[in-house]
Each structure stands twice: as C-alpha cells, then as structure tokens.
Image (cartoon, rainbow, N blue to C red; front, side, top):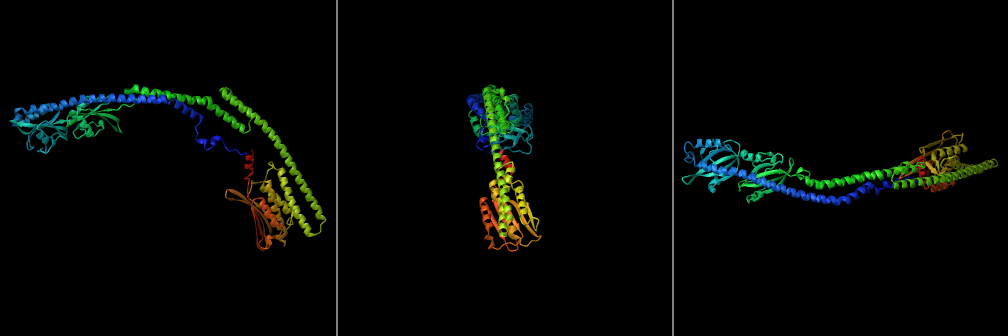
Length: 587
C-alpha cells in the first residue's frame, strides 16, 4: 500500500488551529469579560479626565482673556487721556512731539496719530510713510460710524513695519467730532501676555484671533491658522468654546477660545490632549493596563504550559510513531517516563502496538516467504515441463521429413520457448510479480534469432530499446513475448526468400505519452520482400497479433508494400512505471 501522507496534510485540516491555539482562544474568551469591563471603565475615566482638562483649559483661557482685555481697555483710557492734552486737543505745533513722547513711554504701541474727517494725517508721533490718507480703512470708518472705541483688523504697521492691532477712537473738538485718533498695539506685546502664562511642563500655548477667525500670532507651535466663525459667535455670547485640532507634528491638541472684545478680538489657548498612558491619567491607565497585563500573562502561561506539558511530548511520540512506521519497532520511548501520567499511558500504548505489529509483520513475512518459495517452485517446474516439451519436439523433428511439418514444429517450439523464458525470468527475479522489459526481450530476441534460420546466416538482428528500467507484469509479459516470437518467426519464414548479406530484422522498443498514460511500442520490421494488400489478412499470424493486442488492451498495425519490407507494431499502455517505483510502493 502506498503512503498517502498524514491527516495534517489534508486540505480541510490545514486551516484548523492546533491545540495551543485553541487553548489560547478559550482562555482569551474566558478572560475577555474582565478585559472588556476594564476597557469600558478606562474609557469612562478617560472621558472624565478629558472633561476636567477642558474645564481647566476654559478657566485658564478666561484668566488669560482678562489680562489681555485690560491691555486693550487700557488703550481706550490712554487715548481719551491723550485727547485731553492741550497740545493734542488743539492740534497745535507741539502735537507731533507730544505724540512722540507718549509713544516712547508706552512700548506696547507703535504710533499715536490723529486724522481729520477726510482721513488725512494731522498729527502723528512717527512718519506714516507713503500712505497719507486712511479714509477707506476699516478702523477709520468704524470709529466714525460707531462714534466709539473700535478695534480694527490685524495689519502691518506703516510706521514700523511690524504686526499691529489697530484701535481707533473719535477725536472731539468743542464737542464735535473733528476726526479719529488711532494707535497700533504691537502683537508681540499682546503675545507676551500669553507667553507669560505658557507653562512648558503642561504645554500650554496662547494666541489671539481677530474677528474673521484668523490667528494673529507668530507662535508656530499653535499649528492653527484659523478658528471656525461659529466658535467665535458662541464666544461672543460669553461662552468658553473648547474644541480639538489634529496636526502631523503635534498630534491632537485641545483648544479654548474666549472673547476679549465682543465681535473684535478673541484669545486662543492650546494644550496637548493627554493620552491614555500619560502621567496625568495614571489612574486611568492602571484601570485599563493592569487587567490587560494579567490577561496577557495568562495567555503566556497557557502557551508555556501547553508546550511543556503537552505539545513537546506529543511531538516526541510523533517522532516515535514515525520510526515505528519505518519498521524500527525495537525503539522504546524512554523519555516519556518523565512525562505526565496520561502521556506515559499513551507511550505504553504505542510500545504495545509496536510490539504487536512487529509480531504480526514477522508472521506475515514468514507467510510471504513461504508463498514466494511455492510460486518460484511452480514457475521452475512449469519452465522445466516446457523444456521437456521442447525436447520432445526436437526428438520428433528428427523423425519428420515433411518440410511443412518441420516448419510447424519449429514455430511451436519457438512459442513454447518464449513461455518457458517468461517463467524462468519470474522465478529468477526478486519480485515475482514483475519482469524488466529490456533484458527480458533482449534475451528472448537473441534466443529466437539463434533458433531461427537466420542464425549464423544472411539475416542480421538489430535490437534497439530505450525502455531501460520499465517493468511489466506476468499477464503482460506472456502476450508480448508471444507477439515478438510470432513476428520474428513470420519474418524468417516469409521475408527473406533470397539469402543475402543485406537482410536485416529490426526489433525496436520505444515509449510515448498518450494523454496521461505512458505507452510502449514494440516494432518488428524487416527489409524483405514485403507483402501485398491481400496478403495482409492471410495467415495465422494476423489472428494471433490481434489476440495479443486485445490481451494487452492495446492496438497492432501491419504495414508493408512489395519489396519494401514489413512493419508490425504493437502498442499498449504501461501499467507500471519502473522497478524502483514498484519496489517503493511495495515497501
């Protein structure tokens, strides 16, 4: 019986998990409720901690907004005070110098200037550059329209070239609006208030936002360019709006926006969002991580225990079983003495099984040897009996004078010799079931040629074969040998009426593939007189050839033309690949 592999090699079992994997899955499922509950609790604690952080951030933003609002509101008071200075109120010759002194004493401002109702500069602490009319600016038009203190958009100051936040206030003379006073608050000064509250340990970052939602700060750590106007509307209602932003550099950050001057300027505070494993959430991490660690430790313990107590012993017994499969039944699983009791019992069962198999194999081998001896004796006696028949035919040939009778007896003698040779090869072979094609047919053709009229005469035998180790069974060897004997006898009898040195009888053995099978082609060809179409169906030879082909489940073909010789071919499927493969399958 040929080995077909193991159960583990089948397609269905290939995708089934092993013992270790199944135990791990069972333990993981058994412990998963604890892990799930811990994960839920960790998520709840994390959300609570995040809410606490958002409330603290909102409170910090409110405090920060208060300081920055004081600066802006103080700007309004300062501008009212400047308007009451005589040199400024009268727009006299000393107005520019007064404005310059005030600007020097207040470093938060870039310039103080007064513009008439047409937007022309009438008094300024510093040069306004190329621009002389500011009537179309938002802060100028806003101050005249509101007749109150207004805050303009972020811009680059014309006198200093640095970022400023412009504030404006109507300028009165004798109770009437005579123009607009404006100043630029340095963004860097507003930003310094945020820097002062920037806690490096907590990662807090502050900035300011204008009415359009644009962040007017130079601090790139914010990683925020603009704020949703909807958030600003909520901030105008007195809310501290908290939201999140994510960037590739800083990750997720929590931001809070609060209103400084309603509808004009806002303060923005940013802090990194704490992760689950941060020190700020150590209690949350403990709630989540410790059960997870216990869960992982349990899986590791199962992994190690399964390998140490079960799998390594199963692997050991598997190796013992494979050695038993190779016939080494004398091996004793000594190492299994250190295994758990169940494994020891299994090892004892293996050893008992190996002992029983060894005893059975010994009985079977004795029976097979006895049977082979009997079969060899049968083949030997059949061969001897056939040789006796051949000898009797030889004696009879000495008493027969009729040439036709002599020819018939010799043909019968050749056929009997072929059968005798089959039986001789069988009892001499190691495997009584098969015969190697090439050496068997080589000797058969040689003996048939020596017994025929062509031996030591004008007919030369040319034997060709490419079969090498191909084998056939007894049932195939008999009709094949009879076919070759019959074909050679017919050639000696009919193909060479003229004896000359060019007479050649060719025996050629080849193999070819037809579908999934290997076929053998046996060709007997001569260069004799050939035969006509009418002759191709005459004689006992054709009937025998057809019978041989049927026995071999093959086909035969006779082809010959006058003076071109005759070709007789027998083709049949090969049931056995080679002797080595058969011996392997037997073992």
